[in-house]
Length: 129
Ligand SMILES: [Zn+2]
Ligand SMILES: [Zn+2]
Image (cartoon, rainbow, N blue to C red):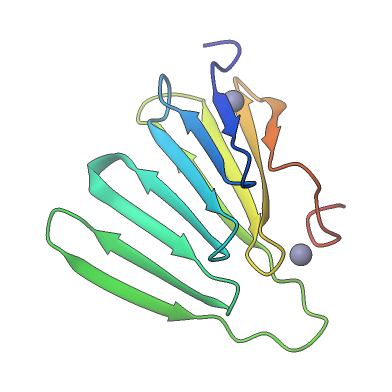
């Protein structure tokens, strides 16, 4: 794998659907109206972030649900970072999300080369370095 074959779609409501199916089997949905970002991983694992600092993880196979409340002081960086690795390879994927501002971006690491893949559009201050 040298470059990614990810796809991103935006509809007229501002909702975003991002798919990295070939290599990682990960999908990201951003729902503007509800302020939710939902990420689906292999093995029926679904992670949802909310603007309210709550996030939950559902393991579809066992129907287990974990709710995580992030405690942030005002002005703290509200970024959530998720790394996805594939077994037996040097390739990984990094998703950074700011739930409060509903923005995200994706990076890939292909054989130690880092590639910026996609963004949700405008990046808020928390995701800019
Ligand atoms: Zn990509
Ligand atoms: Zn932000």
